Image 1 (spheres, helix red, strand yellow):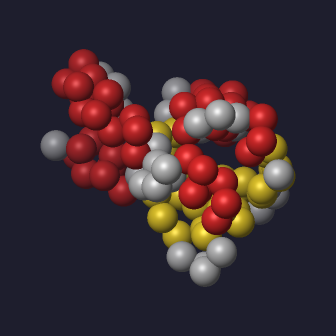
Image 2: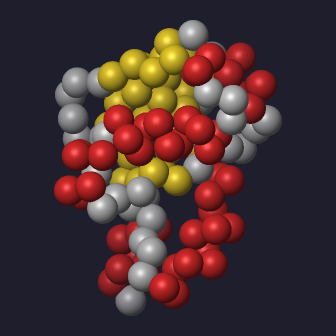
Length: 110
């Protein structure tokens, strides 16, 4: 099952096969590799809801989250990837979006 992935600020998207992944961690890693050269010169990180706790732990150690992974479901709503169980996500996802995390800008200004 292929879905299109768009990176904010770039007109051209790519496709990824969701059946090749068994969970959010695998998907996030594949997208990280796929868009490595476009994510803040390779230093950005794509996060899902599952990554939130781990990143909060590393926040004081210099790890900054730069991008969030959103998906559009079959009703046209956009939600953060990881909010629903993997099986429900695969059944309802129509498109993926990688967007700059608005929270990262706020934490960098402090």
